[in-house]
View 1 (cartoon, helix red, strand yellow):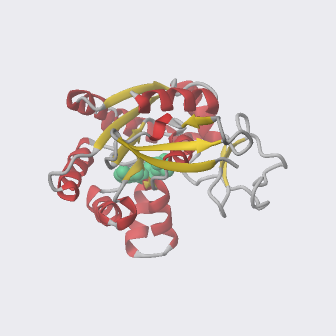
View 2 (cartoon, rainbow, N blue to C red):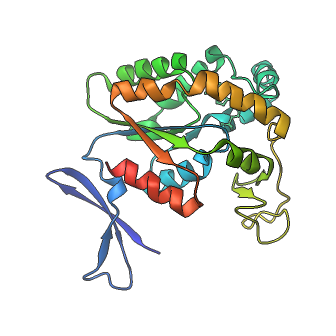
Length: 256
Ligand code: AMP
């Protein structure tokens, strides 16, 4: 396995992956992780099943930053059986957004926690203009005048492909690994390659709820494209291809 080494340079902290076989004279600079020593905040948004989950969890490993996935946080609140969970469930099963008041309580605590001090990768938040403005305010409060790198990544996928991805998506209830019965097939039928437990389909991954989720995206989330374009923080990536192709497009956008 490659060894991770951090070096302080005049441009900040450079993270390198050292190849153990030729470690004396060969190393690969892992240039997506060059952060100039500043906290790095990356927001990923796109329509349902645009592949954000798969790519952001890989990016989180690569950059060593926490992956904050709002959909999973909400599903955990639902599993806790609390009143808030019941409320969230009633919106999720209709393909609608959970009220920002509830989302705000979850996100404010998470982003202010010590694990986010070097930055974060946000997946599924913000999802409308109200949440984008809330995020700006939280960041201003946390940064308290200090600098940070902020990037918003918009995942672009053709609507036809999205539906095919949604209805074939399965995930492991133990480790959260995401599979697709057409595009990322598990080695054994309907079983997680890592945990060997039965894969599950999300309750809102049906064709009917997907249509409502697409409408919610068009009406509420798509306006984020203009919001972040005007802020000068937007990169749009082609997310139609294979996992490797999209990863290539994502890392290219992150390096800009
Ligand atoms: P996801 O796992 O990202 O596809 O999210 C699943 C569902 O959780 C969405 O369809 C929404 O109902 C809800 N949800 C996730 N993130 C948010 C958010 N930032 N604001 C409101 N609702 C959300």
